[in-house]
Length: 412
Ligand code: CAA
Image (cartoon, rainbow, N blue to C red; front, side):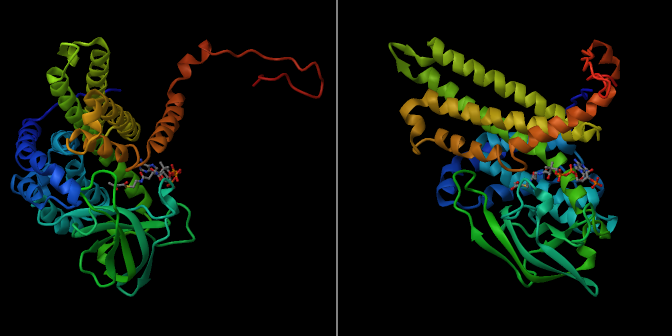
């Protein structure tokens, strides 16, 4: 069932602030940080000072308690100016959600207020070299030792790694268990044995670091085990992704809108054959499709975010649909925007090429779009249980075998 999409006044207020910060601190510096592959601390500071990290943190832990829809609105505004900065912001929510969905009251009281104030940045360590889509196949171990866990192994694709102060690290705590194999443990920057090794050289989103995080017998107190009950890690990871995927999808909507806006301005200024190219029907077709797809993606994302806020039963499916659809749209729109710009679109002199480079990762991270389609298809199969009333309309023909030893085919 669709959920009411209600924009709270605080969501709109935060989105407006995000738009201002994006115009002042993000867009003007986007090319510089992209080229240097450096983090935009100045913009992150402005985001912290404006209280935008409070968006997704409940009020009782020092946040605005504005929810996932507000988070989507803020992310969209930041990503419109620079998709990389959009994820630099949203990844803090991804890294915080395991604490939010699974943490004890004491853990929430300890970490969430610092995150809300923007004093501590967060990262999410799930993926490994040999555990990407198959997230439950991870190999980093956490072994009990008195009051501590000893974490050993390495993680791959840690977005925000190095910048972040708090890491939600998914580890094997019970190798013998199938369903309770994994636990999430918080590791703080500076813990002995915890290091950032390879810093990836990326095609896009270059203003946010993506790194390998290494754990060489890292000792952390048991009180850092999220929920203080081992074996809940995979569930917490999946619940986290249900909440975070609307954020990636919002990043995609922002990226698509940003590319569309640039193509719109260019196509109205670029004169060929004596008229702006926006008056040429083939360009109009592209622009119309780009606008239509971006708008459709936007409302699917808002619907998924509203479902997450309503803690609806179909949140996994909605989040996967929004992530998959919006990120495919972002790639299509960015590709067509480059096409509208022609030769200029192919040059790094102008930001439109960066929109194209930034868009690709959206279809890959936080679950590839193939995994999203799998989640959606599995969910549709479950929905089938509610559709018994349609059975009379389904073919039920029986095929005779004309053999005494075999029942007719299709007879139940
Ligand atoms: N909420 C709660 N529990 C869930 C759940 C959900 N949405 N989905 C699954 N579970 C539970 C199941 O109920 C099941 O529990 P029991 O064992 O108690 O029965 C358990 O989890 C296992 O479920 P599945 O059998 O469905 O698991 P699976 O191994 O088939 O995997 C998957 C499911 C959807 C493929 C999952 O592995 C997945 O999402 N993979 C993609 C991983 C991913 O998105 N990685 C992105 C990393 S983050 C990143 O990219 C961030 C960044 O850099 C910015």
